[in-house]
Image (cartoon, rainbow, N blue to C red; front, side):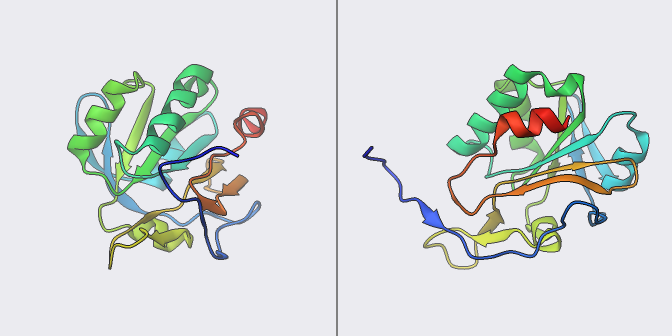
Length: 171
């Protein structure tokens, strides 16, 4: 069995949007490779001719976010979907992540420092050992133009990664 420098933590049950349900709308700063502005998820969905891939992830700089965005880049999901991420990181950190992971111009990131979006989706989790500090648990939602969930995956432990092949098949 492999030794890790971290504990794998089982997460409790969640009540997240399921396939066929409408995903909650929200407005947060949406960061691209040049600037950010308050934008709603419903705007992103309505403006897209492709499915919208919403990726909830750990704060920028944490290894789960790095691995996730490397997969997004390597699989070129931006060619088949409008790709947006959501995390508690600031717009400045998001700009750096877009540049460092080489997804600038291919993806955008919602900044949600209060973790309110994850709460609305029922996927918020406390960071282990940190009182009143929370972030979203790993999650993937594929939405249509009306925010109807076409695919949903939510992590049951931390860290956990989606089945990238299953996400790709959905796109």
